[in-house]
Length: 466
Image 1 (tube, rainbow, N blue to C red):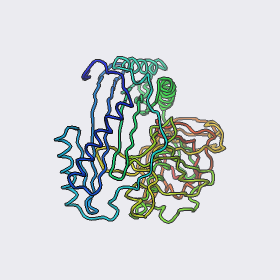
Image 2 (tube, rainbow, N blue to C red):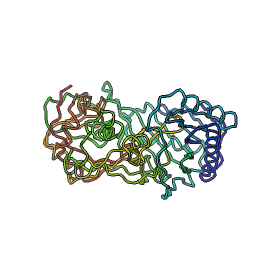
Image 3 (cartoon, one colour):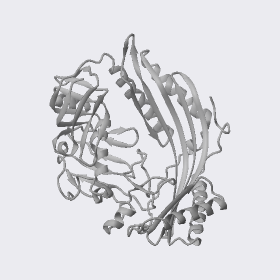
Image 4 (cartoon, rainbow, N blue to C red):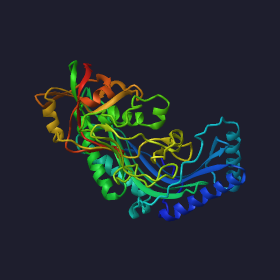
């Protein structure tokens, strides 16, 4: 099945696309100010995507589409209104401006409803690749077909439920009445693998892997890594048996460690969560909250991660940002609104796109490695217990309580994996357990193109056999 609107796309030119989005943003900004907005901010985004999906060995969908979006935020007497449109013509701009102003005049006043203080963006990021700029549908189909063939050639027991390769090229601009006029463009390839292994009557648990790359060379490395990780996990899930119940050390893969500990910790470090009493980190700046080996950085300069960029959703410059250093909480994350509440400057953590008001979040998280050696060495340090490959469950960032199931779990004896385990429950409180991180591996691994993390062994986790 094919839904592409044209067989191939013309070469993408990032600079031209940035200029186009900048014109769209400025035109809507002018419209809003002329209509009476006290302050206004516009985010313009344009993108084109080619996506190819296989089910098993069969091509099920190839699509090529493009689109634009404009998001307008206005402030009128400390009242905020927001509107968005996927059209860029004069009539659409007028409707967006009047709609946002109409909503603002019906909204409650809030002293923090102001644009963030303008700080000039001085760092440039070149995230456009010449080869990716020229690829078309046939190229992406070929990459996807090769991905499927290489994966299934590993072992006849492997089954792919779905796999996908996508190319995205786009540009965006942020313009505001505070003086912001920032733009950026990028090209990237992403892939995903999802499936399992089947051996006669034994059906292993599902697993998945994927990520993104900024050029073809990096994509080749990503494909090789993803095929290896997916096939190893899926084949390793065959023959699952029961685990054992205990409370003690558990070894978390980089992916599971991010899901259970790091992402919820960052959510708790959101200044908005702190201000609204939804964070256990309130009042803990400068205090030790984790083992001294734990260091957490948000790094929008890391070209390996999807969060690469020179500015945030509000046009505020971004930079490497220490959240935890030597186990000590260094800072909260601020966007413009949260900064206005506390009377400080934004830390460049406004998140989101043109279709909503700014949120708050990190860009590219990296947990520094420790001195625990390789992943195999970490098994030796664990000696006996549960290895969690993936996490399926829930974490409450406010309280830190978590509970869920260990996916792609393994039981370890005498420092060696002895069997895969059926879905085993585990739980605890991340804030209580951060000081009980016993070891971190000596190398950090990429997690789905979004973060880097080492393997982590954490004591005091409650495990219930499945």
